[in-house]
Length: 336
Image (cartoon, rainbow, N blue to C red; front, side, top):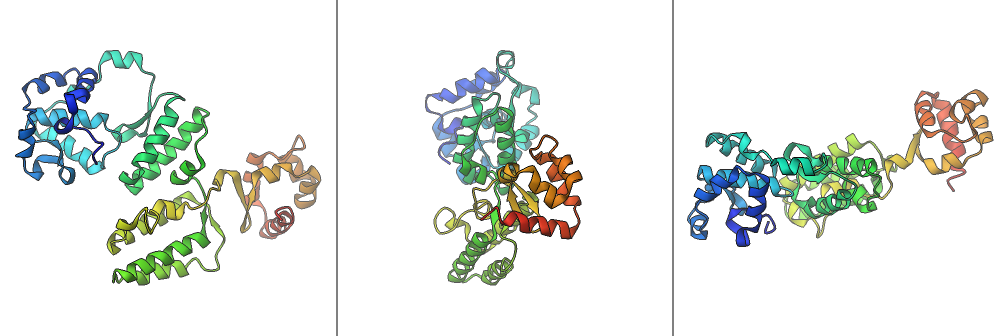
């Protein structure tokens, strides 16, 4: 990943200046580290915390300290790279106080949230940071693990709501806050089966079986837990079948495969086996709810004549099955 900077590829050491400014104790390590480019060219792959990219050298205490500090300024890194850096710092006996931010930064900056707080990635300290975090999340999406994509996406949506900032609909999809069309899901599982078959992978049958499982089912999946489990299962099969090379080309990523609509689950409520749009429900007259649920329930969910969605969402699951079915039928007339 060429846009990730460490001491081996820092033109003019501009980033190193930022590193030292943020972590003053790093300056002593920088003074004694050999920063000559020839130093890095001679190193074995195992001398880097990120061997595949030959980034973040950890062969000396000085370079390990610098690598950890550079890492803290990077936007997105694989978790195993971060773990390797922290392990190397422990082995070299580098105290965590070395990476303590300057007092200047602490007093000047607002308290920050992170999309990935465990590794301090994608900072959001104010409303102005939300669009920047959104852009970074989208740019780094392909580099994140399925788990990190889900966690960062969830926190991005919550922080956007906290700061009253609207996100792009496609970001909601990437973040895993839209519903799954089972028809589209079935089509993409069929496409995976064909790609696996062409690659002579024995997992073609597994993909076909998953596609068949979504025949004749409800049109949408709205449980985020179920969606994330499904995305993880698809990701595992994709890796085993060698299909990850087709992401963004022939096939969408597992997250994009599962969260495949622009329909936000928070805009809908489940009634029996169907999903009803909350905006529509709030437009229905009080007389509808009195006929459908009875005057007492209607008064409870619409005390001022307009349905209170929080109350309705609490009551619907408690309704008898036959009343849910009847309500679904009545709502169908308004959905036409």
